[in-house]
Image (tube, rainbow, N blue to C red; front, top):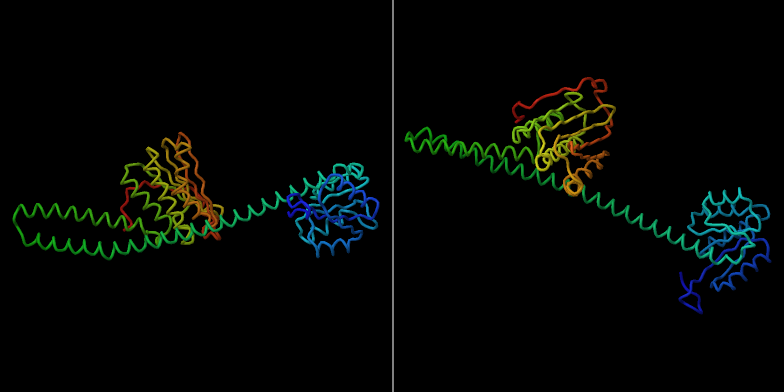
Length: 382
């Protein structure tokens, strides 16, 4: 707020005074002069003049009598709210009952002051302006924070989209280049094996074929992890396949329970659920020291729910924060983008990662019977 012409460092206050008594208006000006509050006070005595002044001139605060001819100070407050002005509003009245005072504050007026306490007027004005400025600053900060969060969410979405595209490109290169080259080498080795009978050569060929088969399997597994075509067979099949591969690699028992064999889920939601299960299993392998994992997949009550629970040692607060800061934070952003949310809880009895996504429609509303259980000794869906 700019200072007064005589003292640039001193707060200068423009006041709009709604009052029908010239004597009371003079008392207000006198009280402000005695308190040495640099100010300009403009008097109006009707709602029309009050509105015109607010429309044409900037004021720092409004002082309004409560009882006025044909209307009240609260009618003036309604005008301020209708104009959507962020301006402090103080009721300055000769007499106001307790009920009216409570109503005044309840309706959002900055403050009220009795006219026989005029010596406190400058303090009330300064405090009301300070509170108003603080509220405006907070509103601006909240708006800036909301904008930052929106931009962060957009950035997270862009990064996730870029990651999925990069994964798809890498998977395609592995399939077309590395996979094709390995397959050609396998054919050449097989040809050599058919035309050479020397024992040492055959032993080396056998060893090379084993290594080659291992490389083919690894490239296929990497390609599936990067871009899972198994999702074309549905979310249930994809999660079962993911769990089966995890069980074979780690030796941990994994049990999948599902509400039905086919879940009516949009492709983008399927991908979020698949990546959530993938990340949760990766965290189990890295941190949990678990002996078993349970995966529950359900579309009951119009909500897709994926819960991955282990019986490991749990995560301490530091490890949980670290996990949330990287992989799981990205999953939270993904879940939010499809209208869902992610919850992570941990205790000494284990950790649980729960994804929930409301579904737009459910094609199987009646299959919420007993959940199936399936151990994972089945082959890959490859």
